[in-house]
Image (tube, rainbow, N blue to C red; front, side, top):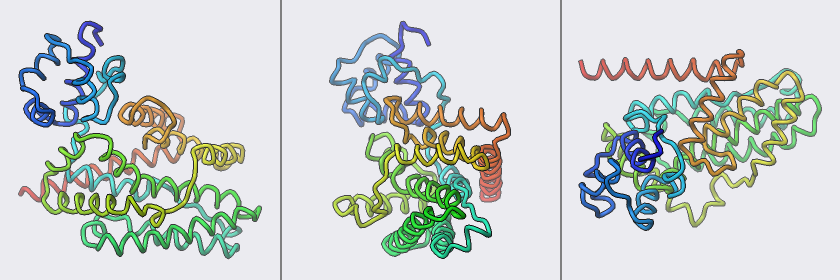
Amino acid sequence: MSEENRLGNNIRRLREARGITQETLADQLHLAKSAISNYENGLRIPDMETLKRIASYFGETADRFLNGDYSYLEKGELRITKEKLASGIKTALVMYPIHSSEKALRNQHFKKAYDAHIALRETYSASVYLNSSFQELHRSQNKSFQESYTGYAYAMEDPDAELEAMANQISLLFMCVSYHKVPHELVKTGSAIVEQLKQINDEKWRRRVFEELDFLQKKDSDEPETFSVSFSLAEITEMLISLKKSGDLADLADYYLALTYFLGLANSTLGYELSHRIGIEMLRAFCSVHNQYAERFFAVDSEASSDISSQTVDDKA
């Protein structure tokens, strides 16, 4: 990226990637459209207070706009649509593998946790999402989550179930983080996400997304009630190291390491977008050496996108 207008190019790239017009950005920040145009074209430089407002709108920092590089973003790449939401749900259903073996299933704690885990995964579907009461759905999901998490913790004490229980506990945590924490945190980071959600190209999806966000925001003051398990990346890293050393599940450890960046969970100052991009590149690298989990991730993602595209064509016919 040219250093002459790094800031202006960064503002333009991120705005266009999110499908937001200069008019919308100007209106949201109470600025003139000409001001946004001048900033992007390098004709004017925003003062620090204005820059912070622009950065905050996109959920970024002023430093990232000044020193980062968004040249990798394509127009519309980050737009939120019904098709992307449905495709994302379908992909996520198989994004977090659940392991079992005859030996592990003989452990009663593992078996109970495994059954609850499967039941939990089945609640994460587009049809359930669109047609269920969020209060009842979250109550059911919370119950299954607690049963799974606790059961796997006990099962880890059994050498015959330890590795599968460890792998499944990571799967459980990542599943719940991606379905609950990540969307909620993204909306809290910047107004641009909210503006995009308002433009989802399907009224039912749009209404349900905002109903869920309202529900989650009301739960903020009582958050321990929902998916109330405290864990740190350090703890997950320790489990990934154990899986890596096991040999049989080494590929799974690499896969989840990439997902840490893909979901924006890595402890870094990169910001979500760049961290997410790094995660994708890591998954591609692992795919190139035939990591079965990374290969499956891209295969399912491609299949989901194809299915959604076909449905969209049928809808228009």
